[in-house]
Image (cartoon, rainbow, N blue to C red; front, side, top):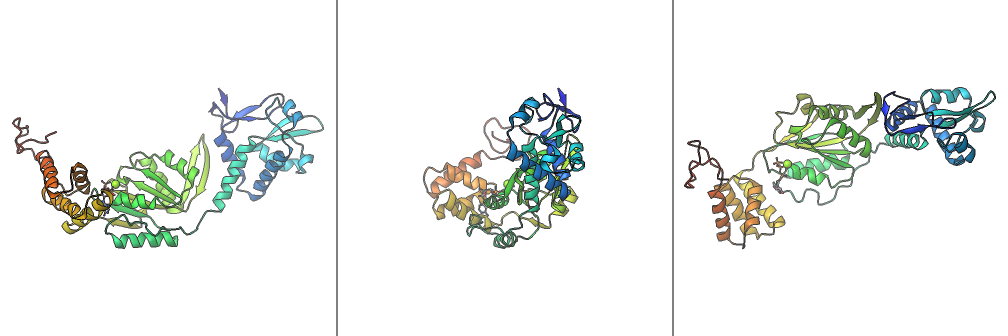
Length: 375
Ligand SMILES: Nc1ncnc2c1ncn2[C@@H]1O[C@H](COP(=O)(O)OP(=O)(O)OP(=O)(O)O)[C@@H](O)[C@H]1O
Ligand SMILES: [Mg+2]
């Protein structure tokens, strides 16, 4: 296995460094891109790189260059061709972005290393400089599917429409529409969705570099691992995303708004919690709210008549676990839209619902008093 000529670590599949008769080595694409970004921090050198990319694109392919380099490049040039003093080219040579293909006493032929990768890296810096501060188009019906929470809907819409900075945290018991809020925001452009239980620091960083999102939607924040927390701490405070790969660094500045949700903030590190400037703690629904949510949600999205949806809500509240998902489950078990059928399903679920253990063993006769759980 070859060593990368920039970081001197193993490289399996990299970019060839043009040489005389054959490639003179290999580099990781990431190392090359990182080096190009570093050089491009100096605007003069960035201009020089862009100019050389353009020059090579105009003059490639060149058969002589291909032959002399053993196909390791398709174009090469002397300083007199590009009319850039050799001293200026040397800094790119030192950075590993330019390579010497052929050299005699009187002339030296150079070629860029990985022209396409360099061009791509420079393209990214362009995008970064032009970081969008644009206001978002908010669909008129955003959040319409959520019943209640009018003040929260209004506040979030204002934040989004006005392009205000800020991070929202929604914490509350199950089935109180937290994820529904995130799903609605996901309808806007420039969002990236992640789940705390599946995200990693590297995955999040990669996503930031690849998609440069304006909004991060992070569900299950209570399950987020430490390495992802570190990434969030930086991007939420200063917009900085930093990556170290093969001992090389690259950076990105994002204007990011984070919307996160979870059941509890107990496992969220305090410094991360503090970065959410708008923390909203949802309460469990009251009886009236619960019935109203069931009535609206089940009639609209589960196609049951409103009076039946309302009845399902009341029954779920009075006899079962007061969870909207349970109410939804009841409507999905209905064989007809009638109160009697709702009673049948509720009776069935009550028979098999989880019970407090009294004796610590199940009653084999099917009595529901002492069994811990009938399934
Ligand atoms: N206020 C509401 N308006 C409309 N639907 C609701 C409302 N509250 C709950 N629901 C419905 O209940 C179900 C669960 O909602 P959601 O997934 O948003 O809950 P959650 O708060 O994220 O719960 P969890 O903490 O378990 O993830 C969804 O089908 C959703 O449509
Ligand atoms: Mg949820």
